Length: 125
Length: 287
Image 1 (cartoon, rainbow over the protein chains, first blue to last red):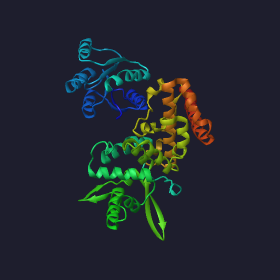
Image 2: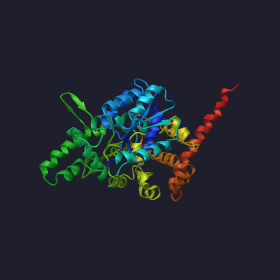
Image 3: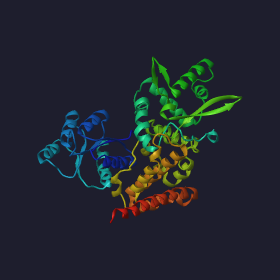
Image 4: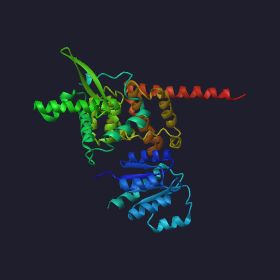
């Protein structure tokens, strides 16, 4: 069975690198992106199984990147990772478009494992 | 033969690990492919290069003639044509006034001159950068990585030279070498929040120690740097997954191998000395 590919979109490239390390040690492939535009482009290129998306990012924020990804692929599985919701209206809109989950920063890297353990089997089935 | 492999000295065409991350890996991916030719179609030139690198990975040091024979049997004309092709891929060529870099120029492959019957011929093998690029990109199976470890045990003595022993302790976690090879260095400030164990400081000293060797580094020094990086990566993984309990598991690596233990913990002692010295001079900041 092919390895699942996880996309991590975060302008905090140190955090993205550590997330990539954690996820790779779990046996998955990882691609990282440093802003919303990069994230949308990499989503279209790599079709990841799950995307972890920061909200506050330069060039294109996480909400807009989420909406663009959902326009491209309505079944896209996206988890926001952020310190705060930042915009309640767009958050509710994202929820109505089946945002998979929300992880609040700061979080322990192990919480990423919990998210993947929870959702990957559902997605793969 | 593994025993005949000459460990390359300085004035090499490859630099430290940072140089691999910033120059060799992105350049090799751009020229020779970002993924394995088995995963997605590549240009013919890229496919030939990757097949050649794969051949070096599982066969070790070879002349271009030997490589050509493995690929085309004993048909002399085909072997000669392939031999010429391989030499061009290794040393580059000039076409219509434009030079294209070969594998030796990029630093993925090392030429080892050998004298036979008064003739000097070149044997070729992967450099450490080449080993890392193969692991990162070619989607080698675990078996192929095991074979490569045995062929290159003299090039990376503290990692490939201890491969089977390490596998007996950490199991399939050994193949996390792929993470290091793909460019996930972890030498960033966020690592300080993983544990009180000073992994950030270990990574940073590892960078500081070899910082003057960005353009060119001796193979022995690079072998040390990469191998140390692997063991610190392993430590980070065990700490992330199991905290203090993970630390005890990781320490088992060094329990039954005195050479490995001396080598690694000498580095830890160097790290402590480095930071002590620097922090002591912080007192000069005060009145």
